[in-house]
Length: 127
Ligand code: 5GP
Ligand code: ZN
Image (cartoon, rainbow, N blue to C red; front, side):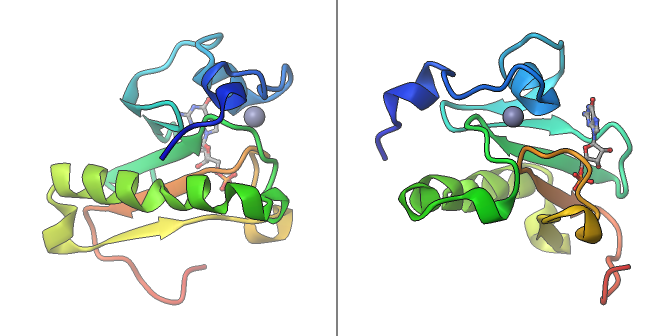
């Protein structure tokens, strides 16, 4: 799908946001995926053998801040997650795609991101 020019130009980035800084290259990182809409990095504190953060280039603080006009763009994370999971063989073993929304759910970085977890048995319910 077409990407809004403001997204491609990174004009929505916030100066005081960790993931905006990483996305914009202001903080160095080893990106495992990058497109105009998302980038992905290995989590600094992995909770599973595969723990990747898939992060929209556009800044939204929480899932609740995603407006209807951005649903298709943010929803396209499914394609990114499936690709990364397949590359790591997680389509065979299973994986989880998680968003923590709000401090009460464990969100600590307020730029939405999708945790792709796999490579071990994942219990339910989560803690
Ligand atoms: P949240 O708790 O907001 O759902 O997830 C934030 C995640 O970002 C945590 O799993 C945390 O380990 C990870 N994280 C925090 N700072 C950094 C960083 O500078 N680099 C990377 N790669 N991950 C980070
Ligand atoms: Zn941000």
